[in-house]
Image 1 (cartoon, one colour):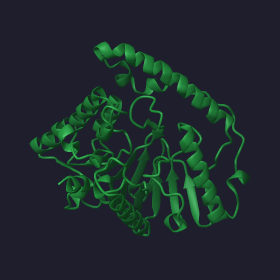
Image 2: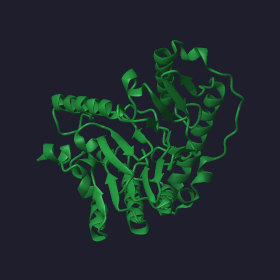
Image 3: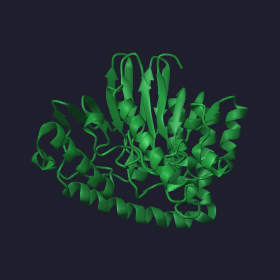
Length: 352
């Protein structure tokens, strides 16, 4: 890369759940998803080490924030944002996931808590003081936005899949009722901070373009953990995509989108192999691997940081072997964030 550069601040491969990234161009410095969380109980390390790595990640994120002009929060999971640190957010433009729609109930609650802390710290008021009444809004079927995934032939699994879609649409309509009945959280502007909701929008800083997708499923279709947005940063002919939590990606249309964007650098999370047989299946894992392979083969991506969710169990490279091998065959770098900075993923150190 040339004038568009990035720095992995903290990732799962460094020992705590995170995918915090600092991106720099001559015009702007953008810190994406400044969150960190302790690894799950099954991670092969002591509780003391897990707490130590989480603390180190938190300190690294705090230091990185002092170099940033803009902070992006793709969704309200605690490994993607910290609630609350005045020093982290003060003096910044915050581009945060719209909390009023395409959000599940728990993340709506987290967003209210976060924005209330912002209001108190920088405005001396309560969030309740600025909430607005909203007009009911209608929403179409989210599957219309992902026709390839919707219509994919899974053979014997198709019947089960139709049932999952039926339940998913019902769940979605219940979320719509909640969105329409809740008060509207507005974009905010105080002396020390400004908040905008960038979903589906574009921002320019000199010659740098920041583009954000509309809401995308966090994983599989109708994922109950909600929605995220992906971030595209462009400077001249250089392009970086931070895809946030697409889990692989699982959904074929999202892989198509990445291929169409054709980034130089792709920062993408991997499948949740540590939950194989519990929250994910072999069918789902095969979808994510096939999509990752298509991205490598059909785009000009030169570097793929393949990390978040993935290095939480020691067999992650075995279970996604084709992706790493294909990267080598195509002379493309496929690396965890730890490997990118010359280190061994913690889960492999612990296992060894």
